[in-house]
Image (cartoon, rainbow, N blue to C red):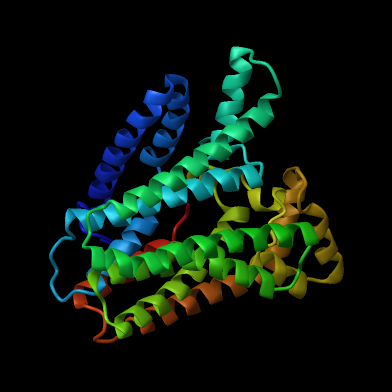
Length: 354
């Protein structure tokens, strides 16, 4: 098992308590605004893998010699990461003009539909985007509040605020670079690798582990080992996401098949195919990006990715990164029970189907 049997439920319970408490403030402003906050509540509580809180709790466990469960205040602080994730996903779906997330309409599309249903004035799509931006901002505000009021020891909170703040800057910078890469038509491997490093690896694995370790009062050696593990697993996580973005089953991923091609994502998988494929196939792939490919076009694009050797190369890189991650925690700096949790989480992150 990747975390203790009750960790997921504990994270969910503390999220529910915090969101319900903050919604009372929103409801006091206006019940119509609370209905919008309800979309955020549903988004956070009704889905997601809770990867970031799980890694943060793993960082806490890996830094302690005892195998006891994390105290409630630590669970609360770690759970706040799920609200950061909600903000990122709501805003990411706007940037990518995505229609679905987890098999449901994205937040901005759901709000747009409500505008149309009720026959309101103005442009429904613009209204949906405007309100969804604010919903994402609300999630970010609630995350900060949940983290700093979690009840953890002030000294521990002070230590953890460093990686907490760094994580937010890194993920926003990585997102900005990602958008820049799409707009500029970047085809080099260095750009998507840097996006992976900061938009995904730091934010999904490295910094949550770092935060959990700081909450536990970890040594510098333990933090270095955890961060080394986190960078490698986080990069492998994103490479798996790149593959799922083209080859994933929409019934499992909750997003349309080939969505990364439609969105014009400049992934490492694509950059590698452009390098390895014959020139004509490379031009074909470039022409598919940002379009709505029909079935045969999508199948040809997938064939180019496979036949060029790009898919096999990325799979090999995932295996190498995972092995590097496990080597990073093969020391006495990591507790035995923490190492077991981290191994299971690495498996879940790099071999997932959604």
